[in-house]
Image (cartoon, helix red, strand yellow):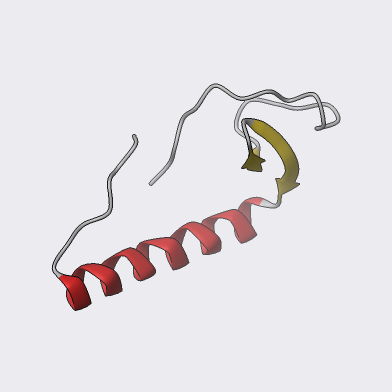
Length: 63
């Protein structure tokens, strides 16, 4: 799972294509190590599945 968005990178030093970042209000505000980013994405997927199981609805995908 991955997301692609146009964002501003003014606050990230030496940004590179493929970096994992936290984005707030359209700005990349922090770079994440790949391992942490992948673990975080997995946690979000688990949360989405739990919501679907509990409420019978699926979160909107933006890929």
